[in-house]
Amino acid sequence: MSLQNSNGEVIPTMEKETTVSENDATNGNLKHSDTNGFSRAMNGQTNADDIMDKIQTVVSLKKQISLTQSVAIIVGIIIGSGIFVSPVGILTNVKSVGMSCVMWTICGVFSGLCALCYAELGACIPQSGGEYIYIKRAFGDFPAFLCLWINFIIICPVGIAASSLIFATYVLKPIFPDCDPPVTALRLLAAVVVTFIVSLNCVNVKWSTKLQVVITTSKLGALIMIIVIGFIYIGKGDVENFKDSFEDSDFSAGSIAIAFYSGFWAFGGWSYLNFLTDELIEPHKNLPRAIVISISIVTVVYLIANIAYFAVLTPSEMLASSAVAVTFSQVTIPAASWITPILIAISVMGSINGNSLSMSRLFMTGAEYKHLPHFISMINIKYLTPAPSLLVIMVLTVIMQSFEEIFYLIELMGFGFSVVLCCVFAGQIYLRYKEPNLHRPIKLPLGLPIFLLLVSIVILVLTVYQKPSESGLGLLLIALGAPLYFVFIFWGNKPKSIQNWIFKLTNLIQKIMYACASDTDKTAL
Image (cartoon, rainbow, N blue to C red; front, side, top):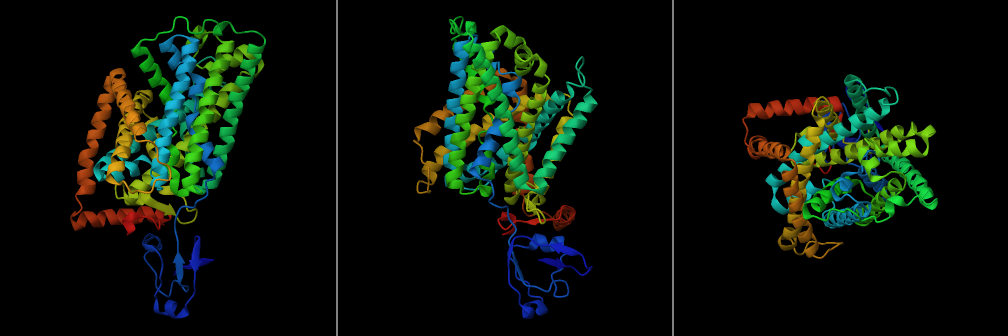
């Protein structure tokens, strides 16, 4: 069904329940559910001259992400470029093959425990927004805003910008084999891939999730190829690197702690599915299932892939390599070594897609609670996707791509996420006392989040110890969020001139993006 306004322009409709009453239409009594944004987008006209039907319209995100797609999203985000490019952070510190494999296993188990806590929170608070919603439920608006601010200004745009630059580097490397690719070309290609991914997410969520399934399958296929080749070498008797595998291990507390820190970040991304809870099919069942399946897959694949690397390359060769997977392919299949950079680029594209898909829902949820500009909470009327939020991510990412010290900013992400993680586990513990009767389909022993909180505090201290300047800048940026909160959010009774200016700007952006507030938009209630 379609509508026409007074200019004869066709207005596409959405998924809706429709009833027709000529009487109501003649009198101009259009009844609808939360179509304030829709009517504003149509120049505020809802008279009988413009609309001849009585319509009840539901504008919201669809529940269309299956268990398989959920697993693909998590695995696709976690397995980025790290396992292909430089899986040596643990080896550098513990200095032995055996201890390196042990630490990879420990990091996988720890990440799985963290993910289980997020699964409990996601099952009992089934709202998109993830950690932002959990912190808000436990501690209120201000801490939740700071969590949102960290993700908005640091974690999301810096992470996507860095991934896109890595993608561009590996795509252009075969074209410039003897030198570094030009910086302008890198940034242009990085901007193009981000624009493509964001555009795809703006048009169709199913296309985006299907792309994620294809990319995740491709990167798992690449890792399986590495594993098979490595075990062929082991079958031939190339096991020199595994003899006395714990010899020369560094068992000092400092080395083990920093090795654990490096491995833990290699599993980053396990929390992102919680940002998409509203779009999951049967979230109470599929969220915890997807988390457990994904972490299990990644832990096993990471561990076996490292064993395969060690079967072919010595520890010194791994430490000297700028991209371990490329060196691995040059040693084992020289004729096909050109394929490896392409596989790395595809892998990184999966991380970009998963981050864009997940973070856009976080920012949309934050805007629904008035913690970000209102237009970010809106949904495109034609495609029923959070296009405004996605476009904001694209703009922030392109800005971050222009920084020469992008990898300095990446270090900020470690500090920012450490702070958020501590707040989430503290909030989970507090909610057990604040809301003891909250229905919890999954209820873990209280000792688990307490243990994880303590470890997260240690990780935060290690972050400050390892990267003091980056941590200091992180604290400054977090502190900057405080005055922004009190000026733009806490100060509700603004002068009418300012309110009118904000309304007109929001209205203009809404028309340009052809968007309206969703049925679940808290600012529309």
